[in-house]
Length: 373
Image (cartoon, rainbow, N blue to C red; front, side, top):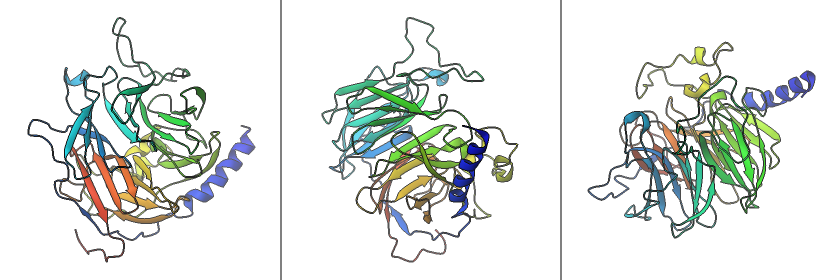
């Protein structure tokens, strides 16, 4: 892109970015269903990286449990299915070759279950019966020097059909598959519904259409692709061909007494300064860790951040409609929400890394928010 055109595109996107900045959003009243998941006595969750809900109301939990191996190289992936009442039903993919380090789980419109494993660089599609139906990516061979991809600067060029720490998956109305390829390649890979490679779009960087850790991905009913550009602290929206449509940022005042789950309160001004290293926005308020778009004719977007640990409700054009929650260890508080499932506008399921749990949240937007919670 020529410099003048590049600046013009950036300016146009900035208008969208600042349009809803620093409005005081309403707090949405909500409850957390107590002890929703019923685990067997000998089963425990580790860091819960993903949660998804099927059309039948079954809840799929992808967690870093069943860990084996040393702490620096554990195999930590386990996919569990629960009924609508939270009763444990089964484990899917026990001892699966792709399992290494859980990152996200999604359920498509046909109730196929897709697991994205950051550690093995693989994405697995299971049919509703729990059998492997499609495989994407390939992990390092055990017969070779099986080590994680080395981080070099600049990064190696991506390879079609291979992934380096992928993060999420979504589908457009035509069934095309979009995989966020994630921590190193910082791009989106597109396949058709049959699993044939189509193209990729995005590259590492800060400009329009560039990405820094695309951490979560979702599609609306029109086939627009929403990407949580976490390291750049923004949500970018692409069409099905990978052309940038708009971007927006989540800007809402942070209460001065907000605590962190661990460590010192982040220096937000430093994280967002022009001199900050690439990716510094990850821990800043409003940085999108997880995205979920509700079904139905009137869709809304939910996103979450690590600090101050809130969930944000937005319109699809980026208007902030409300917030809920904060960081903490109690019910209705959150420790790094890593994935959100939103089967309806007022029913959410959140997967928490730091608190090792899934919370089922029921929102009550018509009620008056309490002064404290």
